[in-house]
Image: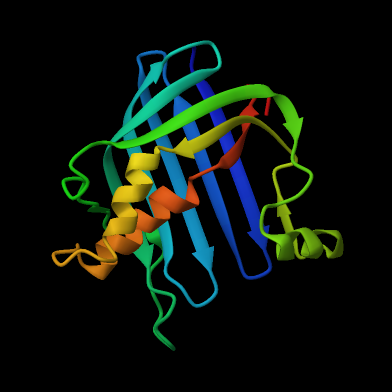
Length: 186
């Protein structure tokens, strides 16, 4: 696989989610996930690892390192520094006992007619929400990883809430995202 870049974008009047995937010919992969929403921390995740190409249209991604920069937007009246001025912290991967695993599926360029969140589909014609108009790649979180993160809620020795919040973001937010391929001229 040659170097390829993909991007996902969702925005509303009260927040946004942007994600990008960059496949390197060397087998390395990088993912950026930037999320902001009203009343919540703004977080920028940087995920790195490797991918395994199983066919021309299918493969797996193994994330081996995650760092995050968050800006506390919930503190009333407090002026926070922008994410670029905040020091990145590592997200502990040992809790899972494995890499963070995703499957990717490449498809022919397809339109994204609606968003799975019904309210956003209703908001879009009014100009209050939007997302990428087409997709070329679908990202799916490995079911074992989803199951593992789900069990943290019932575990006696569960990771702290902050770490669980980061896991929910990188596991649930990236799950089933539709990415558009970025052409070199874009």
